[in-house]
Length: 147
Image 1: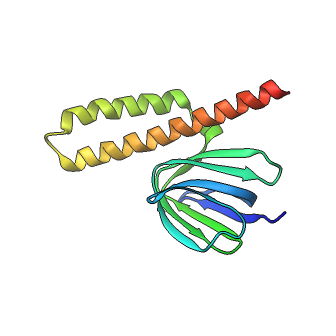
Image 2: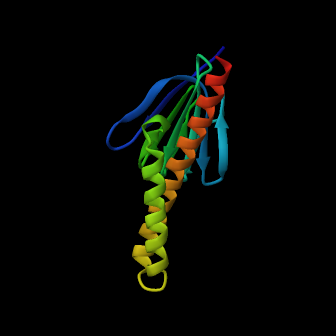
């Protein structure tokens, strides 16, 4: 079986670097899944969930707030604005932050376009975290029931 060298990096750290079977990412053109032998590609990432299938068949779920993906013949590199592994995300804190941003956004909609854009970005980031954490918890529960 052929594999893909995969790396997801933020300005702060390397989030994951290993050989994988496939990766699914949210791009500006829509969600795509990259398998071994995928055509070369460069695309903008949107806030959302990245799901990786590792060589052992286990899955890794991460949130991403944006950035770029570059697909080579046998390698995928993601340069993310920020990214977190789902198990690192505190679901309650992410949901609270999203709710605070939603409330603040209601108050600035008609006043400050810059603040409105900033709050919208915070909401998108926290939604991505929430979705990643929920997907990871669901996958973990399914695996726990099988054991």
